[in-house]
Each structure stands twice: as C-alpha cells, then as structure tokens.
Length: 101
Length: 202
View 1 (cartoon, rainbow over the protein chains, first blue to last red):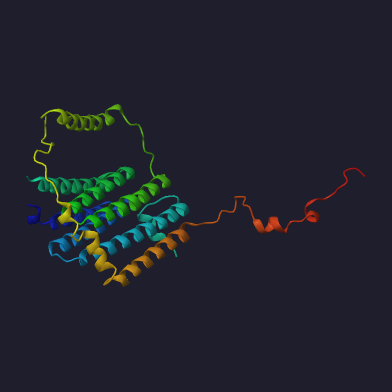
View 2: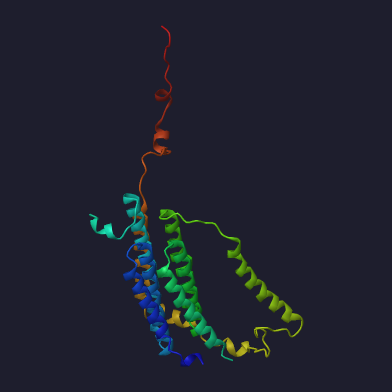
C-alpha cells in the first residue's frame, strides 16, 4: 500500500515551511540556521524517495553527500556565530551587515 | 492491514507540524527540541521506505551531531532567560500515556485484553534461510559508493576535514590573563638564577 504513495508532497511542504521560516523570522539567526538544516533534510529526503521510487541507488549516494555538506555547514556557521557573539555580545540579524573583514 | 500507511501519515504529519513549531516558537531551546522531532520523524519515514542505512545515518548525524551542536550553542550564548519551572501538570500526560501503553501490553500477555489492537494476532515468521541471500540497503549503497563514486567519498572526507579545521581555528583564541605552565621556562631554570641571598639589615 505504501508503494502507491508519492512522498514528494511531504518533502516539498517541509522545504516550503523552512523557506518560510527563513524569510518570516527576521530576528533570530539560530532559527534561520535550523530552517537551513530542515531545507537540507527536505532535499535529501526528496532524493532518497526518488532513488527508491525509480530504483536507482545514485540518489542515496548523493543524499549522503548532502549530509556531509550539511554537517560541515552547520559546524562552520555555528563557529562564526560564536565568534560574532564573543565580539559583539549580541546576535541580531539586522546589524550583521556592519561586519568588516 | 494498513499499518504502513498509518505510520506514513503519522510520521509525515508529525514532521510537518514539528517543522511549523520550529519556525514559530520564540524560545530557541524549544525550537531545537522540535528540530530533533522533525529529524526523528523523517528518519522513521525513511525506515518505512526501506532506506535503512540513510535513515540511521540521518539519525546519527542530524540528531547526534547537528542538533546537539545547536543545543550547545543555544545554551552557551545565553540569549534569553528561560524560565525552567516545570509545573506538576507538565509531567503528568507523559506518565499517563506511558503507563497506559505498558498496562495495555502487559495485560495483553495474560488474556485477550487488547484495547487499540496493539497485540499481534497472527504471527508472521521469516525464513532466514531465504532471507540471508538478499542484498541489504547498506550493501547496495556501499557497492556503488566505494567503487563508482569513490572520488566523491574522498572529497566528502576532505570537506569534513576543512570544516573541522575551520571550526577549530575560528573558535580558538588565546587568553592572556590565564597562568599557564611553560615547560621550556621550567627546564631552563637553574639554581643560580632562582635563589638570591639578600641582607635585610646591614
């Protein structure tokens, strides 16, 4: 029965909710990073579902690569956030354009 | 009969609701906890679809590494004072649910008391002699990943190395107000330089 279901709706809705989270939530950068992680998750789930649906293993390989990039991105982003908090002692998205090299 | 369908709708609706909660809650700690719920639900969906390796990999990497990293940063940065006063009524529904599930299961052992149809009526048995020749999901992924896409495997290792070095170099800063033990200065000290004789009264 599960084989008749199209899982693309779930991943697309998850992606759209995360996009909404990035664009609506303008005050908290942590929530924006979490939305970014959810976008990675949605894309990777879509790839895995396509690979199972089309019976091709390549999608799972590339979703594993997406997992790697997501882990790297989150670690670097949170490290930058920690430095920014150490220098400015506040994390607001509006003042982040004032950063200089 | 339709257990997989029921589980599919359960997992997908829970994932979507939890993602809505992630973007709508104001407290960052609660957002991280709902993010963990999203990851767990998606892992369950992948388990239903049959991608076991990717499901558990997602659980390990996202929940074990990324969500814990988020939680660590949220708690370290001290953005907002969170009131950690758990009321008595907060713990009560979880206890009642756990108790009712365990009660139902344990009562089903003794007789045919079966409230939500949780007891398995006709047991399905698996012939392991025919099953062990199958190619599992992790074997299928590994056979492609280590041969055809080996370059991408090495490249992902390089990406992780660069990310690790970057995170270490970015967050490391030398504090000057901390007394440290310097081995070379200790070894260079000798008796003549360290003990002085002075006359207090002449």
